Length: 173
Image (cartoon, rainbow, N blue to C red):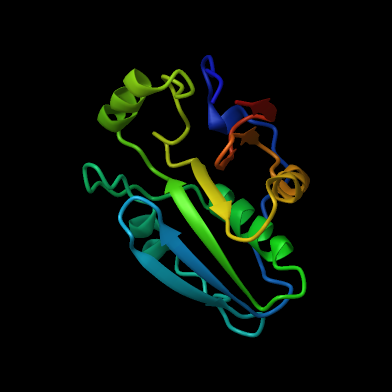
């Protein structure tokens, strides 16, 4: 993830926010690649909350090393859900592996020592980034789907996709 200088989300010129609303019913199977935890979300067009429980997702996307939770930015979660729905194709279910959601400063500093690809001021620290892959979707196809829906940051790595709700930027590892 490239370094961001001073970044103030309140000064970001974003399109008006609309909550994610599925266009069709589907099942999303989320696996946390680090903890082995799994949740199954049944997204439905005809229910009040569409089957999305943001509080449950906050816990699932927590910093597992320190077991700390933050309220994840709903925009980045909604971007992830849009990408997931688009990746369904003709299927009614989709499995996604989450490799990183929220990170504490301590975890981020630790990861920076292991990899040059970890930004000092990563948006993972603010709960504004998700790293993931979707099972059985070729990387090139997933990259194109993500490019279509990610209005903020999009990083394409060898084994995962990074999305965030920060300023528009694109990079490859």
